[in-house]
Image (cartoon, helix red, strand yellow):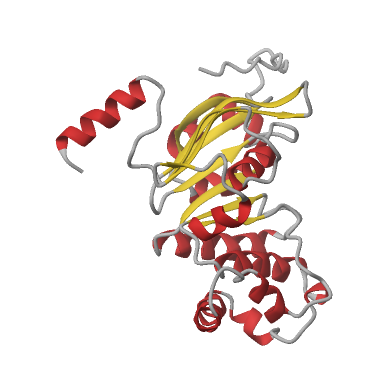
Length: 277
C-alpha cells in the first residue's frame, strides 16, 4: 500500500470510518427486530485478509445477530450503518449474492441436513459453482477433514457432534469463501474435539481465508485470533489484540474465570464492576 493510501486509512480510522485495506467491514451497524427491539447499537467490526477476529460476549449480546446481518438473513436490516466486502457496500445484496462474492457461514448448532449423506450435504454448499468445481472442492474439504471422506455415504444425522461440526465447516468451504463466519463452533463439543477443529481453522487462516469467530469460549477463541471485540448488550465495549484482551482484568474475571484473590483479612472482596474503556 502506498504512503498516500496509508495516510487516507489513518484519517478514516481517526474519524471512526473503516479502513480501505480491510476485507470485511461492519460500520456503525444498528439492527432491529421489529419496530422497537434494537439488538445492535453502532457496532463496528473489521476483518483483514487472512486474519482471525474473535467476537466475544454472553448470551443475548447480539453475536448471532451480527452474523445474520453480515449474511443478509434479516429482512430490511441494518437500519443504519454499512456492511462492506472488498470496499463494496453489500447492504442491499441478497444472501446468494454475498455467498457468490466470497462470504460463507457456519451457523450455530451446525444445521446439517440429517437425512442427506455427507457428500450430499457438502454438494449443497457448492450450489454457486459448476460441476467441475464441485469435484475439486470436495477433494480440498476431504483433505482438511479425512473423516468426512470415510463417512461420505453415511447419513449426516448419524454423525457425532464433532463430525457434524466438521461437516458444517466443510459445507461452507465448498463455496471457496474469502471470509468464513463461524457462530459458536465449540458449542457442545468435548475439549479434544474443539482442539482438533480449531487446529483446522488455524490451517484455513494460514491458507489465506479470513475468519470471523463468534464465541463464548473466550480462552480458545483468543488463542486462535489476532484481535478481538467484546460485545455486550448490542454494543462493542472493548477492542484490542488477543494479548491485550487476555491481560485485561475485566476479561480475565468475566470471561476467563480468573477471580481476585482473597484479602489479607481472609474476606472475599466484593465483586468489582466492569470498567470497559
